[in-house]
Length: 380
Image (cartoon, rainbow, N blue to C red):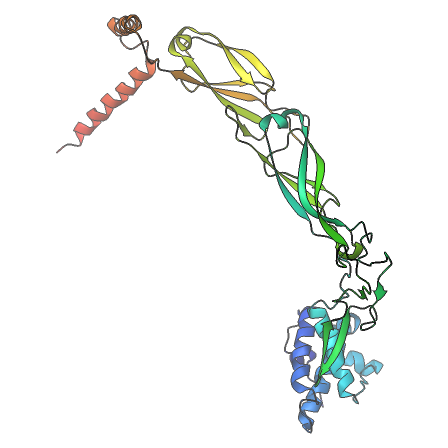
């Protein structure tokens, strides 16, 4: 009698992954296992069939041979002689040991996990970014207990191997036909226990403290960047390694400058006389003042780029620029004499030269004129 397709027996496709094969086997093995269906011969045969399919498809070499040659690959070599007699307890233990273990990550846990990583938000000024600086910070953390040297043991000795789980951190309990793996209740999965806990840290091997650290801030660092300090986090339990400390940078808002990557931006207000006839103004930078020449007839919003007065990039030696935006300011709080002078200037500008002194004004009203001319064409 011809054998059924192993993939169909497990209800999977030929492209199924190892994990999918194990999941399918677990489901069917639980369903057809004789311990759950005592006296049911058809279920017993089905269980053997499922087990045979799993033994072939879970083996990389056997699966490859089966995919190429089918059942003939094993009929010719005699590799199909499976042991059809079984001990229900052992077989079912295999299901949970192999399948549940792989699905749920049944590995020996790290009995001494490192301490927690910490994150500290550090506010700095834009001036600190220019050439880099050092900052002193204080962080609440956990350090190794200096009384027991982090062991958690009163006598500063290594902890004893747990007598319940023999150091594995796991115990196996039988519940009917199930074999369940649980965390050891004596050592809480550590594999060792403390016979005489340290009175200072209560057996944890660590104490609360405030640590003072000096942090070197590199030039060019930006908001959101993190500085990693290895093993400056919390101490792990029972002499486990320290975690890491991540210092997250936040740059305070500056009253003058705005930063975009390596460039700095600022607004420079000038009076309209300087904008009209030109002049020299002082411009602030992060490391002093410089003089900027304003050409005549400078308009509102004009940008001036001052080379290499920005921030040095953290990735290379390139230094950004300072971009200054000109803000032409309308004078306020004028006295009578000043008002008369401006009034005379206004009359002079509008007297005989049309709008040649205000080219934007002239172009704007030319567009307005054309707009209304076109609007009349569409009137009914």
